[in-house]
Image 1 (cartoon, rainbow, N blue to C red):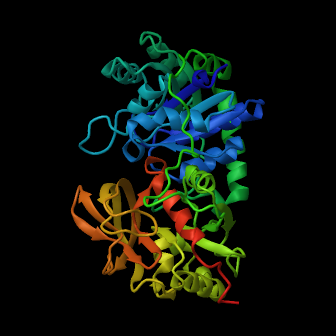
Image 2: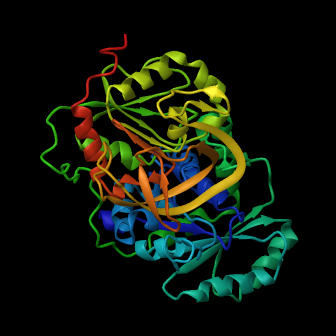
Image 3: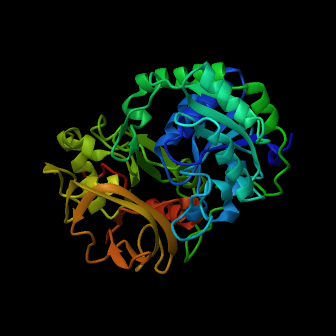
Length: 465
């Protein structure tokens, strides 16, 4: 089997809340437990679902976002992530045809399914309907002839009689029923203000939940029929995305040095795309993970720092209590070494978060609010910095309930250009800090520039310890 013909399915739904994550994660775990190498993928910018996918399969959960990365990169990124897999499962986002606001099908599950030439299995919340389910499925199956809706999994079925009525109705739809799952709250995944609670915060309970989801799916779904459907895909003509194809930074070749770049992780900083570490390594860096909740020092020899998103507001007291690490981060930033911080990382670099002292790198205070800031953004780098050359244009995503005051420094990280125009974030020395989540696979020069800058920096601790 060639890479382009990897068996694959897209798990979608008519709307959010129908049970996509439950079914997709359960299927991933069930097939993995059956001995298949399963490659997990998620449509959209979400970081949390891929954590459960990774737990279910033992492989990195990867995102496929046509807004952030462009439609032309979807199949290559898929082929890169799914290399060596027996089966790839792609969990959709929102409703099947819902995409970036005001941009048609862009970034929708339907668009990704078409780009991957993959059959779609629709997860339908059947809890308050019987015969109407056939009309709903008929509408979704006929809306876009280029989307191959090849099966349905009925979720939240109330009883044997309810399932019988649903299956009778579906007999006339022409779309086969590939599973029926009963209402069951035992295998739920807890949520909070931004979605599910990340795996890193509840690993033992998450392992148990994923195991229960796998058992439910095995009992209620026709795994053999689903696997056979996944094998009906055509070959993709695209070449896999290659993280080693990182352009040298403007102004010359990358340094032959192999700088160490520390990447924050642990329960407070769980938001990161798998391709970022791959790009850093391909650009010549040694990538060293660390946990700001546990580690009192940066990895020895750190010359650059990446702090992604997460839920630092849940851990503000513990992050604040780790004063030795906060001092090291501040010293590294003061040395001019490159520091890339997104969202949670931005808050960690501020003076305080909800009144708790943070690293004090940025002249700003941060706090939780009731207001959700959410959406895709377009932005441009206004000046040369450690992450991006002036004029670099990116697409990103904001997703937070915190505010930073002020929201931008004297030298902003980005000038947002769409859907609103404003200045955002901070550039100071080697620091680039912003609320904006950017997928570096869309602009690999970001990783190359960061690594080249780190190669010129003094290692952490040279003036601290």
